[in-house]
Length: 495
Image (cartoon, rainbow, N blue to C red; front, side, top):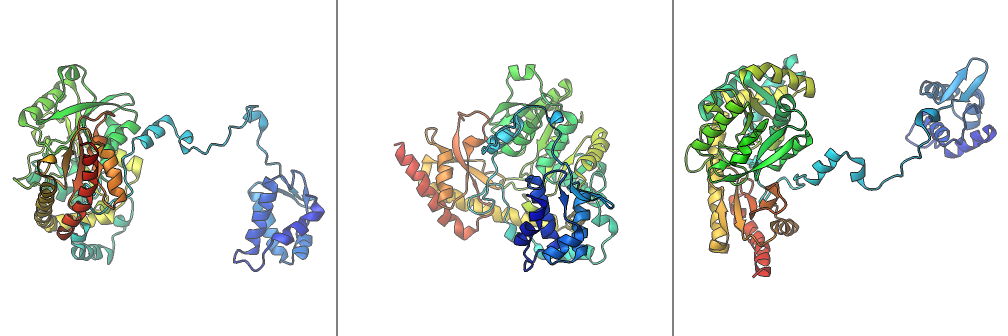
């Protein structure tokens, strides 16, 4: 573009009726022309007075644009010599002679190998509420009025520290209240300083892995296990070794025990997703093995508050006298998932490193919510809410089990119904539970296939995880009837 034509080109494109200010339009147009090489390096631009007159705008506007583009490196301005287009092309000597890589429409090609593995094995669902989403609390029963009152108390004249970054480890009153609760309710042996407040199970496991493992270290996971923590560990470059579970929980073979891992992840109080309780003998074996072979155990105390046949069980951490267990928990299943507050209980020697690392890596906040939660626990609302919701979920569990029996009799059995927010409806081994889940979603019902929780492609069991917590009592029969029709179609196919 010749400089003499620049004014005409700009005048055609400058929209004085636009809500975008003239100086921003002029900046954008000049940038585009320079980047497209329509204004080549070294080309002299019209003076600010001349360009302002030809465009019918204020000279100060043009001066402001020229000065800004000079600061950004697009223009060179010299007193008395005029304004010129700067040479902004990349240094070809630095780039080398390699041809440019062709553009790809496949998003996977842009990802690292680690990123590709993460996305390929992702288990996250777009459906996070309704029948029969597993692991989601009934947020409609959350005592919002009490929470709002406690929050207003802190917001009326908030202390500056509650609006800043969190101190290492989290809000001290919450750590104290949580320590009291865990000692009494879960037999966890801890002091407030051992509690590290996080945003949930994923961050808790990620922090533990970062501090205690190196890429390539071996980690035992239960098989089947929760896909979320499996993804966290895989993304950290660890070598996952799935260990089958039996009626007593994780069941390592003699060959497994011969090559100890750096860490193992277990759900002893309520195995996820199958629901069995780890036996005392198996617990003692794992603790002694960890002590002798210098292994770490992450105890995910999933859904321990909601047991329907008896009282909550003692934690594995409460039996540990060698400081090998890291206990993790979350408030998402008890209160509401969007709260995003979880915690670790670490051995005393790890308390300071974990607290410092949390602040260093994540720059935690949420102090206001942590302060509200500490009051919620200390004033007894937390325990009351658990008791109330245990009755609600117990009733819904019974209704769902009755519907399963009414529709299928002995053809579909139930596992993992003694605790938690879901049960597993087991299916014959020849059916495709993943396809059933897809067809159910198309019919408006969300569920998860049991086979997707196994590490191997050819899972030994088929079934569906059915969450009953976030389905109202009166809606369970209607929604399960829809799901039952989908299951029946698949069972009929294979008869």
